[in-house]
Image (cartoon, rainbow, N blue to C red; front, side, top):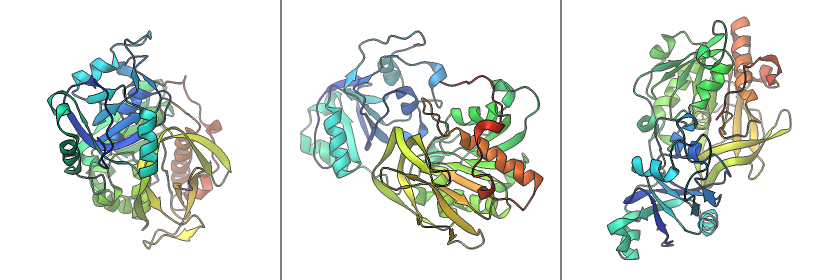
Length: 400
């Protein structure tokens, strides 16, 4: 049941019960396990546009976090049984074991078209006893739920204690090249793995970590991860990032981290009509003019001028420019500070499953840390903006 009264009926899938959240659609043709275990999908009912879901089952290696985070799952044709040599459990069984309510046998194309025309909205999935209630009652229950605007969720999905991912855990030989302090706002497992493959130790901190706690590990750089919720609620993280920028610690952010950088620089954020979700979004790097096919999962965006560079509205951080844009709708997909060692992108260079067009951004961050280490106080994101993956030797690709 969508909040505007549109109703779709199907069959119970996963756990039986009731689930509420924001109904959104994801356009990936593969990677459903990575989708449902992405913390950025917290409090969302995900509609998969790919018609066949669950064919390859699920396994422990492909999970992006410690649990399923989607509030509910909506598919058209669920696999009757998985068929893959890596499968350890059926998707249906995993949803049921983690109490995730789903629905199958609905017209997901019609739902997607409806959301695309009218925007993401509150919704509910009802199975069991609640499914027989009048549609008017179901809609009233949906309307009683809080919207995504104003939702503060990063602290809900973050870890409670810091942990470390060492390069040696992922095939790197020798001492770590750098140490990065990563703020977990909903971080995915592939992010520290990408750093580790490049010889970088990652110390992951809870979402409310302070600069003093971060400085204690003597980081060469700071990273802010993806995550769920409304960036306008992230005042704690914005204040932290302003301290990081003032200290000239090299910074890299993705997704929620990009929105926090935007806010730290003085720009606003706003909610997209139906967001970008999936693994096939075209983005242009405005400096190289290269077009990348990228993975997205965001319902909010930074409100920054496309005609730049401009002085950061929040004084003291110099000039900034929009470095990447979405070719579908010109939404800001990246920011680069021209007088500070900091940059960010709105999409997911750590994408699993694929695409890997943007993995070079991890190398760009390493170049930024290298430059700041060799020339402290004299480098900025623009000096390494054309860096490519050619300068960093990786071990055999480890991906899921």
